[in-house]
Image 1 (cartoon, rainbow, N blue to C red):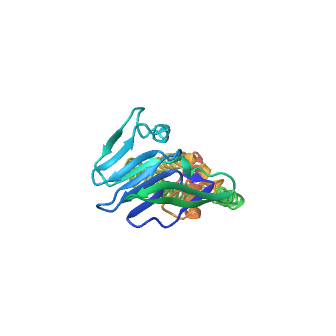
Image 2: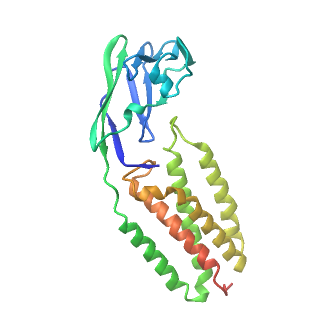
Length: 270
């Protein structure tokens, strides 16, 4: 969900569409109807063929075997009947601070290449997010000094943290999938958790509502712990801009933890 470099593709040859998925090393190619694409491996051996008959992988290609596109063998193996294919392409691995990559291909027998560049992305500054967390925690502690405000404070923090955690989960699910498309399982799970925790937060009252807020906040904070790398890697792989995704993660983590902490304080009113 976060890496240290950005890959940028050069314009693809006519008849060929190319995408880099996940911001990493997953390459997706598709050909125009009636066009045949041959992708060559590291040793320039025929590796992959996409054309009118579907997608074929050369079982004898050392590159195809290394990338686990096919088991060891010989001959062309048909893997599907589509005009597109996605695979983990190790030749997109960056080296140094910047550079170029070129994967040799043939399009209807004409030599060409899938080419582009990679650039190292500077690490983001950490202090704004630490400052944000410190300010939110300090404000929570200040407001929580008034016992009459503890219950609404816990509810507001839980709602904000839960919404932010939901947004973070969905924005990463929309992009962080090697085969492209949407990772529907995390999205569905996020919707289910949101309903399971949000309904009691709305319907309950008094201390039980405070307990529900604490549980919701704790879950929100736990959900985004795995997203912490976004704060020290420059390129965030999400449907939202990098800093917006970081803000959602920070709010879910700190807001959720604060809601859980406030819910443990005594003497909720109402």
